[in-house]
Length: 303
Image 1 (cartoon, rainbow, N blue to C red):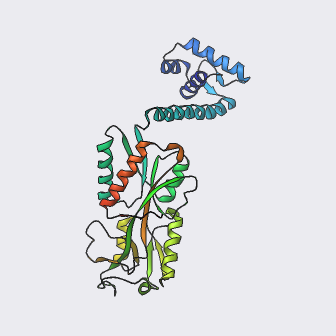
Image 2 (cartoon, helix red, strand yellow):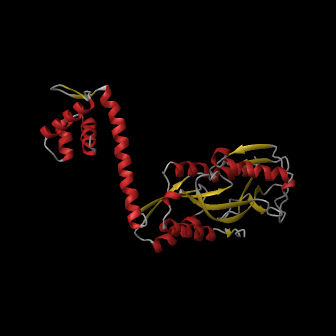
Image 3 (cartoon, helix red, strand yellow):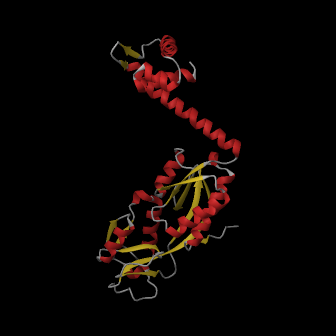
């Protein structure tokens, strides 16, 4: 069995018409029909039910179609990977970014990378840390921009950038006029936080830090859309821990730093070792430039 035989079979299986399949394959119908019969003899099964009015897949044909598509997809993936290996880079990069990434970060990151690689397309995908890690392991992303702590077993990480987390409060809150807020002064307040499934390790870490600093939320409400989160806080339904907003807050809200800076976003790029290339290294530098534009600072390397 050759790959071309699988391509012939898939074309007929999708068209369910030998004439249309032959046209799609740029060949005549009789040779195509003969190739399918050769394949059936080799496999020892009928792949199609044929009659003058219609062509239908048999049960064996439907099973082969599933496997044939998978094989052809894998072969195409191999060709693409070898093309990247030959060029030392890629013509397109699939990059995951957190859903709340600011305009300043995105614009700087993409602009920085385009300057160095104008011919490489960057396909940005909005995805949580957990989603990015999952997609990296499945080969569906080339680079992730994730927040730590997270599960990076089997992946490689860059150096990290840090952005201090403060607290978003309604202006009517008793702590709204303080220059800084102690976490313990928030004890028993409702907390609005992202769902745990978005970044489970980070979620657990944040709640542990809050507890260790005397803040036990009286209730936890989950939300992921920034506008919805602000609405919940404005309505007095909770406080929210996040970085200082890049844009002016709606009337009725204020952001305050937390005393001692116990919480911060720790962000890095992450990739699968087999996909690393000089182009990915340049993209990581572009991500760092974007994060710096958004107020992140390098995390000192441990010696």
